[in-house]
Image (tube, rainbow, N blue to C red):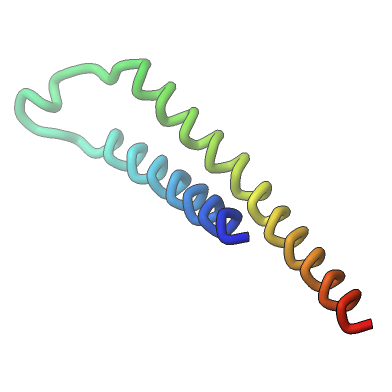
Length: 80
């Protein structure tokens, strides 16, 4: 049950990480750092992290709901 909460936290963290990476890409940089181009491999990393976060988020919510529902049905069976 605890791993479902950890999955939820990781998915939210990944979504915020992608937002931070995109924000940092859009900020202008000065000096030699700002003169270069952005590698396409960086976008692959961003897209894959976003996909993982977006897929894991509803999956973890579903698993938490399913686990609570199962725990409630088990407690009702034991009380009967």
